[in-house]
Image (cartoon, rainbow over all chains, first blue to last red; front, side):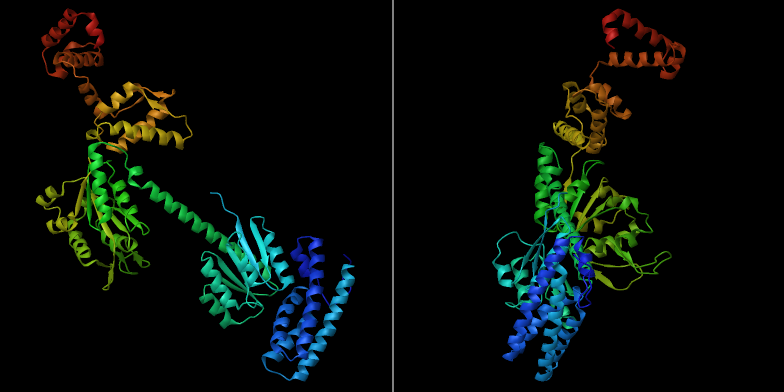
Length: 117
Length: 458
């Protein structure tokens, strides 16, 4: 695996947990790209339907891995979405936050794809 | 003790997190880890039951509380660790009240926290298993067919009395000579009674100074006397729900007997330095080698306490009155000692058996055990010979008596022993035996008359 050059993620923690198992790191990166991509699609789709419950559920699901993958900017936006939902914030703000999350997620996923390829 | 595989099930709907938890837990080769992405998938699983379940609080198909309750219903022995993104104290407290073992938030330190928690559960599970095994072993040990060995009518009668003591919550008095197994009987009663899962507490009253007996049995409050640095519960409270065995009750100081009587009647004790009575529920078994009625007559034992303690009386027979039980017990002790010391099994020669059966065993079963253990050690062959059985000096007389010689032969044996001891100095021997020298000459003359063969035999 190449050295990390992007700042959109940090694999130090994952490497620490891998016990030197490169295959494990590759697998976890691949699964992260897949689950984050699927989660973002569901969030965007739920936003169109104004289904806040599904948005909350999907954000809840994809946020924790971001912490361990060092994708802190994406995590920060996801936390803002959770806060918006919790405080019944404006839909416009929510739409903006989901858009931001999509942009951050794309960057992280692209950087990670480059990392494993 | 062989440890069974430790099974952990991970229920986590996020595939990434599911893999992360499985990976971290699987680093310990002793753990068998299986993952499930939904509660439905988990509850359909029919394989090995889990020792630990890590449960994501928010699953798509089942609420965390509902899943927790269902797991605890289906597998009450499983410990459930809630793993959640939410850092909500109220939710955590609620889940812990519902029976969750721990609540771990999906933070950076999750690996350390999870492994530490699982390790604690495993230690606790091992301890529970060990306690369970030991409880079974203790029960097996004190199944009185295993703990009290023998088939003589005297011991079969004891079995019947023990049965009665087990079935009723009555005070039991066990009497018998030293070494007859009074505490073994007390334990057999306790570990076969309804109180078996509660403590058996034994107190030897002869070993406690009279000024400490009250504190030892009833406990004391902090500062109640010099050296009472902290509150300490006494043996009565320690045995609460179980059995209190008061050994050598006849040695108890008369001044304390009134307090003991009150405790037995009221079923409550008062700690030294306290005014508040504490209710206690323990069965009392007492033992003594003394004749308590004689002690009452001599004013050393209170009559009212005697009648309060009297209950069911079990008088253990001395070993010398148990006939062939001596051989049954000998065989049992030989097998036990050989097994414990990785020695080849041994048996007793016919002469050795006769020697044991002729002995009076003043120390009873305890003495027989010591004699047998020494004989096993001394014996080089598979069969223990009579000369390898060492009886105590006090019973050499009994040994001699058991030979059933004539009075003349006994007389001759004594004389020969003295002559040997005093280098054939007849004058000195006559003085020592307080007989005339002529008597000695007469006995010696008899030897000659009876012939060398008989003399040599003696």
